[in-house]
Structure formats: C-alpha cells, structure tokens
Length: 146
Image (tube, rainbow, N blue to C red; front, side, top):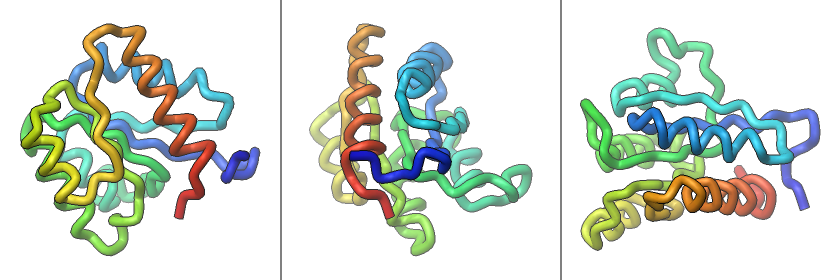
C-alpha cells in the first residue's frame, strides 16, 4: 500500500554532516521505487533555515520526512529536533533520528523531544543501506503521512 500518488514526489530532508554517510543514505533512498526528492543540508542552522523557508530556502518544499543526525556542527541535532517539534507548522512532519551516538541519554532525550523514531546508525556501510531502506519502506510506503 502506497500512501502517496505516483505523480506526487516525496520530499525528504537529510540533515547529515558526514559526507560518506549522506552519500550512502541518499543512495539507499534513490534505490526506492518511490519518486523521492532528497534535500541534503550539513548543519543545524541550515536545517532550520530550510524547514522554516528562510533566506536562500524561501522556496524550499516542506519535507514529508526528516532524517536527522545528532552530531552536527553549529547547532546540535537535539536542538534542531526541539526547534522543529516546537513549531506548530512543522511538528507533524515525521522526524527520524539516525545517529551513531546511541547513548541511552540521547535516545531518551530524542523521544522526550518527540522524535518519531531513533535509529542507531550502523558503522558498516551495507547495514546503513539496509537501515535506510527499512526507514524508507515504513515511513514512505506503509504509514499514512499528514
């Protein structure tokens, strides 16, 4: 069951500062059978400008799904998560934390700040591809998005 029409692209915002992890994540999303538009930003300040449609991002699309790393330059991912979920216009966007920093405190805090899921980032590139494919399948094919 697909919840998006075949002609409507799915807007995914990837917030990831590690270029290799971003490339792997985007490769996994491009492999999906759905029509994805993937937008990639590398830091928390840019991520917030994108979702708020500020400055250079005034014409940016509203994401259907956000994939967020925690260890970002500038503003930490937890701060970005808190800002997004505090904003009434943005809080319904599903936000998945994907982070190598899977300490119990980071997991607990992510859920306290209303992350929709926390996925530990595998160190093995093939496992990362599998994790992203699972996220894509569940969040973009199985569930109904707002």
